[in-house]
Image (cartoon, rainbow over all chains, first blue to last red; front, side, top):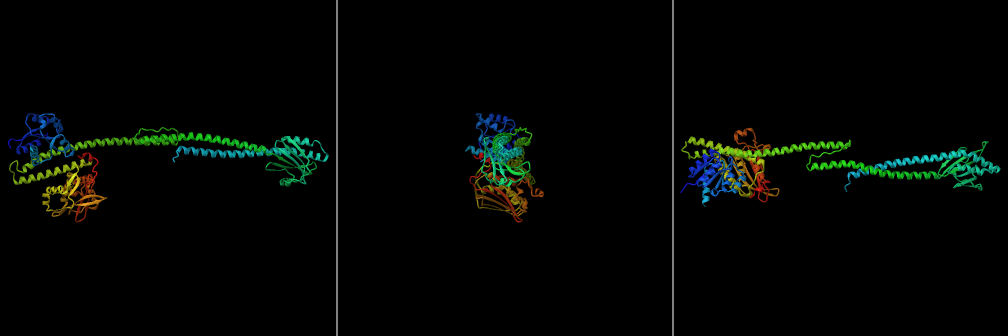
Length: 127
Length: 504
């Protein structure tokens, strides 16, 4: 791997952030974490980011809003988004995919789930 | 043909009035006729009493001595009565000695050649000493003339015209007739007006009832007639106000239920998020640690981590089914229909449960007579199988056999695929075979302890099967317990109502 892929994770749960960043870091990715949408957007504006893992239920600005804000921004709209969701409703899946999310990962997920899904996403995007 | 109530009332009342007045008219006319008749007879008898001696005496004198004033006397007497028509002097030998005819006040005195009387009534009474009368075409009175010596030689036969009576009766009938016509007309008008009042009450009742039926419960009937109609109106208003109250309560209840439903949905979404997030972190790290990604772990630690992991997984599963059952019972589930490969939904479940199968040394046999389903929701059908299979493992004795088959099934001329999952677990009593599909149902308290689980798997399975328009049931004997469910084989089957909006 020439250079580590850079991933932003936005989730209001610190333990999730801890776990996700641990697994992805161990998996060879460079991980930025944000506890809320504003921080996440700031990071994405500053850094070169390859993937966003986004929780839907966030305080103040929720996941859907974040996607809208990103779409309106020249730089951010190129970043692929995967939703981290606790909801199993197919309704959420549909909205998520229509709004431009690449994939969704349902909670609870194991380390293997997470890593293999993220790896698959990058493989898919390179193709 | 529809005859309105009003027409019926009018007809009935008119008919009644006609009958009543006809009776009155007939009675009245009979009374009046009798009165008239009596009057004429009385007058005639008075006339007879007044005149018979004078006329008789004058005749005898005239007959015996040629008394010249006889004619004058008769004329004078005859003028006293308007009804007298004829006076005859008849001898006891039945011969007429004298006869006068009155026609328009002209008197003809006839000296007939002693004509013999033929009228049987006169003949019968000619010799009698008292006055007799006959009422026929006219009134005939036979009165004896007895001279001063008490000798009875002649009788006087008076004949009275009944023209006055006939005229009276005719005019009476005419009057009664016109009276009747008048009364019928008046009766018709009165009954029309009366019935109009009655039916107007009925109309106001029925128009209000129609408005109420259309959902306007603020209607009140105003009838103040101080009779049964007012009572009816009062009862009606009471009923309406009760209904109004009930409807208001129901509306409140419905909006309250809707509000709660919304709250419940929101609560479930939050619960789902709140419970899964900690589970994700815990389960994730336990799994990660168990795999040695966070440094070397001892065999004892591996064992403990496996137990933690298994319990966290169980917790995840129970939470999921709890949320699912609440969600499904809130609204019908949404199916995503696509062709389904049956082994593809069954085999992965068998792999997932491999450790449990090994643990109980179970033998699992599969036989797919049908391998595909043209339309079904893969994920949900997998859940159905998983829940029933988990149940089969749970109740199987160690070393038992679980047999899984799919086969064609026909019911009500429709083609189904029948899934059969059998186990050798304890017999389920006949009475409880249906209840096991109800949420939170446990066959007895002890099942909770010995088998675990909160009893939602089968009810979730039933909800999904029924959403596919299928049916699920269980059969149980001492040797074997079989769960069967049938899913319609393709065609255009209607799943849940909300389903169509979800088809992409």
